[in-house]
Image (cartoon, rainbow, N blue to C red; front, side, top):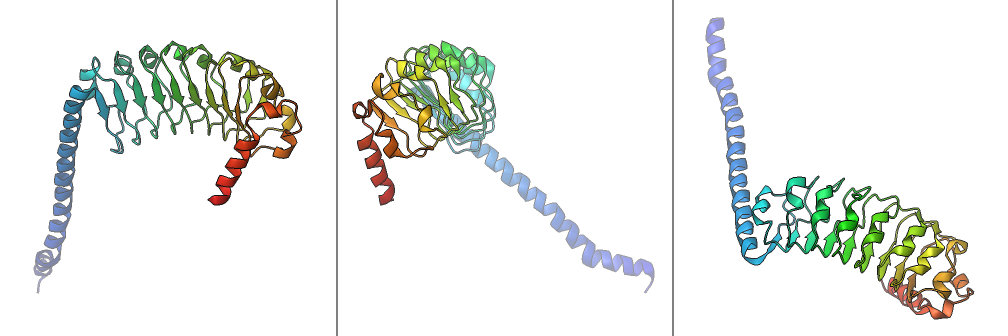
Length: 281
């Protein structure tokens, strides 16, 4: 058999099936991806239509990498947006500040690194949840969120207490747990919060001004780096605080009982109850 005949036979037996397999696989993939895209767009349209009627837009666990641009059609009637558990890296400045009626915004478990200044135009926003993102700071205009009552920033990369928070006169609950905060400055005395959660940071110093917070009732400082000498005694003797959680720091709880004012704060019952809960687990 000539070399041309061998080549032709090899092509007939081997080369053609290989080409067929290579061509068929990407064709199937493209069809599958297009079908998925159509389903995604259809689902998004359905959510937008529902939100137009209810004022609530919720689209969690969908792998979104961007804030849905379709929501700009609903800036005048949305009251709640929940886009938690996605992969959103940024918020569009031209859209996010236009939700004039928005009261609740949840973007937990995304990949946000910065917040645009335009977010602070949401004058009716009462609840903002940004847990488990990559935020290192807040916009300088954050204090303009004058209606904010609950702010959750747990699990970010904040290294200090943002001073802008002291301008929020109606803020009731502030969660800054699981950040990288190392000290609490004098400005803390201007906070208006009722509950402050600073658990699981790296706090080793706290300003005595914390006892000046006019409404602070609950202070959580568990699992930090506090020595007993760094815990202001005025928290016990001269503050509005009635619940203090300090387990997991660099001192024995029994030493706390020796401080003046200990009997004025509901510590012993709380600590005992928490210890029992941990043992039961």
